[in-house]
Image 1 (cartoon, helix red, strand yellow):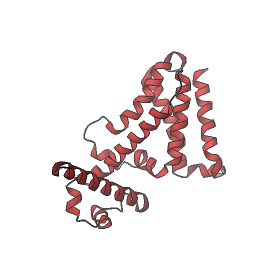
Image 2 (cartoon, one colour):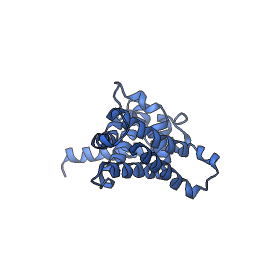
Image 3 (cartoon, one colour):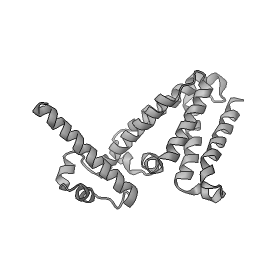
Length: 201
């Protein structure tokens, strides 16, 4: 391995070390209470080292968010296997619920806290676009069977419904329903299935 290759590998390893430490601290201590200095202390480097990779805490969190959305997009790529668009929509909704339920802290960082959006300078939400495009493609393919006027309204409506359910659970709001914790995912999936049944009648 040459010097250039070794330096590139070391940069990637350092970036991974910073991101893993930041993720751990954002989840355990909260975004507002975590500082670049705290992260530097955790990995035993100076804050100046972190600033070589990220200009501020928002950009670091946005990097984590971008990575998380790629993970979600990969879940869709691998898990959506049906040929018929309505069945694809059902599979996607199920995968989305499973992802949110299985990764509540990551989901919170992706969707619920506002700070990552501060690092995005234009109006387009680039980090979420690849995952949302899967939904747009499915709605486009199934638009003749759905009760929507256009693809964007259909995609936004479907996403809002599933996202709302997962967000309620991530923030502990499903507890008011007094549903046993091991039954919450089943309940959310039933709600999603009934929603898809309603929009395809």
